[in-house]
Length: 144
Image (tube, rainbow, N blue to C red; front, side):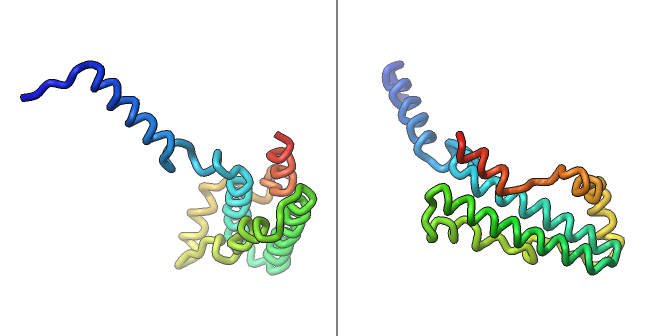
C-alpha cells in the first residue's frame, strides 16, 4: 500500500476546496440572485393565499388577490427598469412567475383545509400588511 505524504494530502484538500468553491453548490441560489429569491418567495406566498381564499367561496377576494399580484409584478418591472435592467433581463426574472401554476390545487375541500391550517391566518397577514411585497423588497436588495 502506498502512503501519500502530508504535502500531497494538503494539495488534494486544497484542490477539493477550490472545486467546491467553483461549483454550483458553493452558495445557495438566493445568494446568486437575490431578486429571483424575493420574487419566488412572494409568488409561493401569494399562491398559498389564493388557494386558501377558495375556502370562502368568495370570487371577489380571489379576483382581488390575483389582480394585486399582477399589479405587484407590473411594479416590479418598473423598479427593475428604473434600476437599469434591460428588457431581456426583466423578462428572464418575471416571465415564469405564473400565479395559476404557483397556486396549489387539492383533490377535495378537506385536503385544502388541512393545507391552509398549516399556514395560519392568511387574511390577518394580508390586513396587517405582513406579506411579501416584491417591489419593496427588490428596492432594498438593489440598494445594497
